[in-house]
Image 1 (cartoon, rainbow, N blue to C red):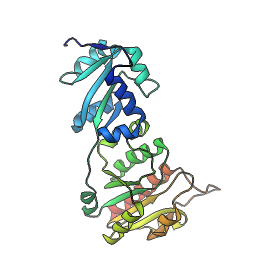
Image 2 (cartoon, rainbow, N blue to C red):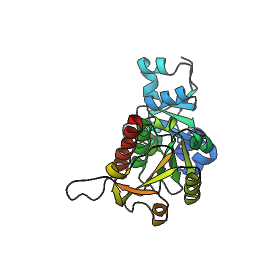
Image 3 (tube, rainbow, N blue to C red):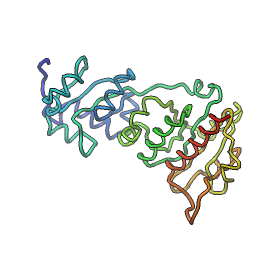
Length: 266
């Protein structure tokens, strides 16, 4: 393994930029980069062709069983353990992180797919919820995901970790004019279903066939009145007991998989 210069200061320009990318959505947007941590996330970034650069801790580098296999033919920097611990965003870092190029997706391509099924998110603020929704969306076979501009930043570290790699594979788009985009979907023949407490139980009302979109709203407030009024159908999840609503990620998962089941059967 070639000799590497050990980065030992938080004032190193690369380390300062790593910290900036971890903390600031603006920096991620301007540079077109985001940070991932852990062997799996870096490996998947490499496999996807999006990996920019790798940073490894001194301890990881000294573990020959890991490093010799993993770091072959990879452009990486070596960081002192004390510095790595300060720049990491995880409680128990694996000693490896990478900068990854932001995936580029075409909204037009997403919407033109035959029988496209789009997940539409309004004001999902919790990063863990958003990441879990993205991971579940891949499992359920969603065509793509569209968010309004007040959702959590999809490339912030906690969202990325929660996707468990799905961030590389699920097409997504942030709409500056969410209501306007919903109108475009309707004009393009999409039927819009909105998860709503005033809706009809989905097992009686929903059909989810053809081109359709599923609207999921804010964790606490649900969908705004404006967005809910644009749906073709308001649907709800039937529940026993005194439970009124479910966590946004759980509700999205139930409805996405119900849609997937119906679309497979028919």
